[in-house]
Length: 74
Ligand code: FES
Image (tube, rainbow, N blue to C red):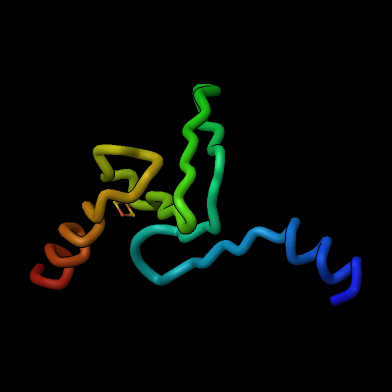
């Protein structure tokens, strides 16, 4: 592996976007919230809530599944 490849591998953060549910980000991460607070996670993969229904926002707590289920049942 070249130095450039090694640097790219070290500095590149992968973000995975799905059609529903959270955005997955390679951790550890620090998230700056709109009010200026910083949320930190040391997890290897972090799930960020995109539905804003999570009780542990900005982290996903799987509450999006309830919305997906109720929208399907409607
Ligand atoms: S995306 Fe999972 S709780 Fe919001």
